[in-house]
Every structure is written in structure tokens, then in C-alpha cells.
Image 1 (cartoon, chains in turn green, cyan):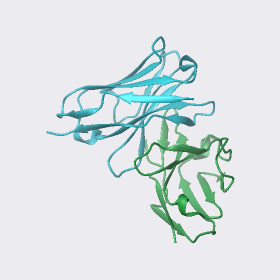
Image 2 (cartoon, one colour; image 1 turned 45 degrees about the horizontal axis):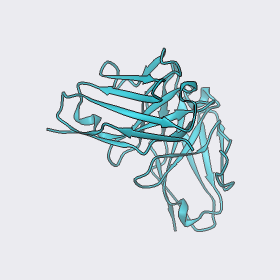
Image 3 (cartoon, one colour; image 1 turned 180 degrees about the horizontal axis):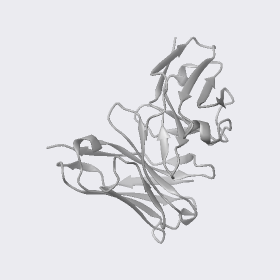
Image 4 (cartoon, rainbow over the protein chains, first blue to last red; image 1 turned 45 degrees about the vertical axis):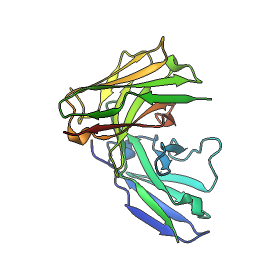
Length: 110
Length: 118
């Protein structure tokens, strides 16, 4: 069960847009339309922000959007705000009722 | 309001055992698959184990297979993780999480620290 590949860090200026990639394989990301994304504040539990590749749960800002192409999923944060400066994780089913997370991406707001 | 309250963590020597509990409320516990996810200090999230709504089916990461056992008591709305033969690399905050329709984890517990050290 390998870890999905995310950049360790991504930065952007206030108000700009950034994109976080999440690269897997044809056995996980490429094989399922069930990629999810989580935001984690320091010392807190992760919070679901995207499910089924592109859908946002109720209450999640529309500044968060996501997509998938082949074995790579992507999370875009538009109109970057100071409160977005936390960690983000992607997740995908990986077959045989197992799941795999990405290594996590730290977002920095310049 | 959905709540997941974990308990049972602490410090243990290598080779020891611990049982984590996760008490659920605010939803029909017996309807949903439940999952354990862990996070080593300063590291990313790692999926550990899942159990079907009835408890009939269980699934494990290779890293814990044969050492950890997931179970649930639907009469008590409680999820468990029995951890045996603990190793230093099992040191982590353990989260319980509720699965949703499309295998996303829509609610999480607050996390419970397990420290394995001599």
C-alpha cells in the first residue's frame, strides 16, 4: 500500500490560486472516482473538503475545487486566504477494501 | 450532532497491547462502515483498518495485519481497535472516522495518542 504523491509544500500570495496535485496509479486514483481531500489544522482532526473527486460537502467554501485526470487528482484553492495556510491530504480507495492517503501538502500564504 | 470520542490511548512498552475505543453518537452507528486512521508525529495520515456496518467484514493495512484487530459493538455504538505486539513505529495519534456513501470519511474523532517506547 504505497502513499499517493503530493508536493510537500505549495505557496501562493493572498488572493491568488494554487493547485495541489495527488499522483497515484491505475490501481488507486486512476481506478476510482472516489478521491477525497482533507484539510487538517495543527493539532486537529482532518476535515473532509472534497469527495467523489469534485464534490464539496455542505458548508465547505466554494473556493475549494478539485478534478482528476488519469492517475492524478488535483485540488485548487482560489482566492487564497490566510486561513488556508494548513495541511491538505488526498485519499483514494486502493482496491481490496483498502485506502491510501497522500503524503500531505503544507500550504503557505505569502 | 455527530460525535466520535476516542479513548484508551497512552504509553506502552514495545511488545505490549492496548485497546482503543471510539464511542459514536448523533447517527445510526450500525448503518455505517467505520475506519481507523493514524498519524505518526510530524507525519502524514495512514489508513489502518476498516470494518463493515455489521462487523462481518474487516480490512487491514499490511503494516498492522496480524497484530491489530478491529471490532465493533453496535449495541453500544462503539468501535474498537485491539493493538498487540506494538512496535515503536506504531507510535501515532489514532483517529476513528465514519465512512460515507462514497468511501469518504465525513466525520472524525479528536484523535488519541499511542506512544510505544521502552
